[in-house]
Length: 85
Image (cartoon, rainbow, N blue to C red; front, side, top):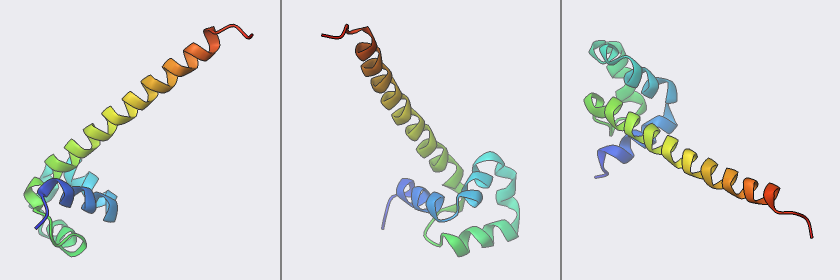
C-alpha cells in the first residue's frame, strides 16, 4: 500500500480539478456526488485527507520552484556582472 502523500500526488495528476476543488473548498467533501467522483477517479485515496496532502504537495512544489529561480537568477547575475575578456 502506498502512502497517503503519494496517493494524493497521483490523484492530482489523474484529476487536477477534483483535487483542487477538495483543496480549496473542504465543504465539497460533504457532497456525496463529489465523493463518488473522487472514488471513481482515485479509488485508492483517502478522501478526507486529500486536501491536506495535495496542499502539502503544492507547497513543496512551490519551494522547489523558488530554489530553482534563486539559483538561475544568481547565475544570471554573475554572467551580467562579469566583464567580457
